[in-house]
Image (cartoon, rainbow, N blue to C red; front, side, top):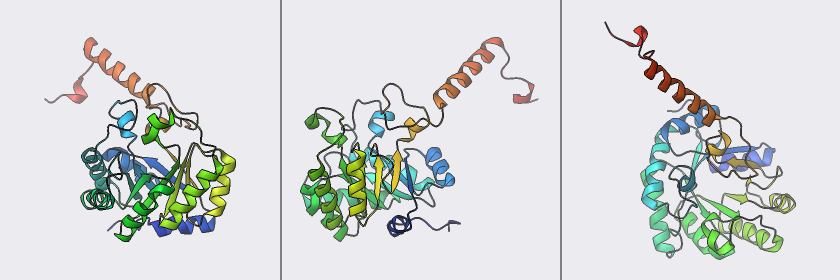
Length: 265
């Protein structure tokens, strides 16, 4: 049994009610997930962002259900305390209610994770209700939808207040335990957060949300190329790793590694 009880969807609602901010980070492997859990974040997301930061694709669309299950199962074995949410990849929840439940059930059954996340608007309310009725907790993803990048014409801040409010309120009414707001203007995110009973998790939605999420690679300085404006770099692990590898290379070439301390007699 874990020393600390696992965070639940009810705990997140209680945190909102008390005004306590929720922390969420992505993880895709065992050592990272273990470190995040030990550091005390309440929620870990196995995101389809792995397509870009792990697999090297230009968007999130290539990730498959089997791939997200593979990584989520690894994360599930590492985590003892945090609530683990898993992205449903494109198009695993656009194939009808029965297939969507089957796909989400595979994630829950095969990964030790506790919830799924859907990029959804009001049009997916029936899907959310069906999943919740099947006993599968759902986090709704409102605002910028990376899986719809081709339709949106790129990654842009979302400012359609009427649509965003409707999507968020409909997701809550359908049974979502939380709403993630991505790239939403902060004044709209504030209105949504104040209207909803369930917690909001922001990424590029200002400080008014009930919690915040970042892609761990962005936060740790491991991302090559473009980093979104909303990401704050808390470390430069890319520089640390490059320096360590360079010193190892030089020590091997110079005959300084291995030394007596690393050798057997």
